[in-house]
Length: 475
Picture (tube, rainbow, N blue to C red):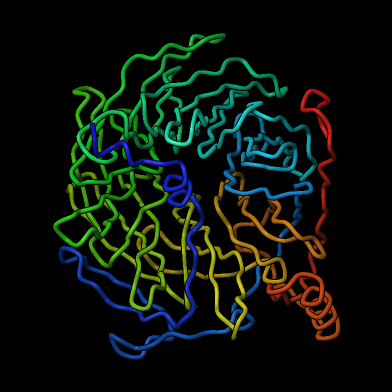
């Protein structure tokens, strides 16, 4: 199709990058969504169009049990985290440029105590990983492999608990195809994402079904869905009989605005249906979704005035086939959510908050704890001095594990971080003005324009990546 010829890898990578946050105060707007019963806004709201401003130093701090950085002499980014609850290990995936002059996907295995067990480079050519799933010693990853400037294919890989690659498969057509998330249910693997090679729009929702035969895999079918010009899904979950997928859809009739959307895929009929659409701004997007107690919870962000963002969360009741409540949350100029988890009737949201300070920005990872009824228990931040942003979260045995990207002290490039906290976020982290100012000034001199501050009482271990071949094993 002629309209697909203009698809380039540059456009693709721009859409996959972390959102660039513009300066300017956020304007929180209470948008009605189909008569939802609850809309919770920032505590600093003054009227419907009140301007919300805050200082990151005013927010409560997380106190991790342990925290680590992993990275080398270049940039690491786009991390995902998953806990294998059957075997008790933490897996982290992401993308690195520390081994070659191009991006490669990696996989890390940690013990629950934070010790790095091993790492593996997933693909020896240019590729990106975006989805991760682990259960019973089987680890699945999905993303894209780069074939040319205008052509990428979905990849699906399986590893065992020892870091050995079991199989690796690709799928795609003549244009850009991407896998964003993966789950496995009874030896059946589902991959969701977007395709520009098939479907009817510029890009359409993509769903792949594979059969895992142990030492090999086989594609069963692929499905596409689209209601706009540019449709994609970023995450999926299952209740055993259906899949639930979240993402975004572009509507040219609305001036090319993007709406967050929640889809259902019935596994008995193999058909899609649209459950819910969030229409609150120029660019709204759901980034993660979970199923819990006959509800589907989708989280993401909504663009507001002055190009700022606020975190959005929707609860959809599968029994009544209606949304029950939604939350708009914003404490800072920009507030973005990427991941969601659930434990003991509480939802845990992972993302980032940022504030502009003159010519500089301050950023920190943020975690929200919210009851399944929609009541916010707390919001806490971590890593302001690292310019950190959380990208995913996983819960297990009364603790949550978070991954994201940040600058270790006195380092030029972004690394991946991992930390563990108890379900209450630990005690508030303390700091001293002397140490805070010392770190601030040293960092400001060495690596402008970033401004880092807040010295937390949490021991951070920095695990260096050295220039070795992937076959040499763990660091």
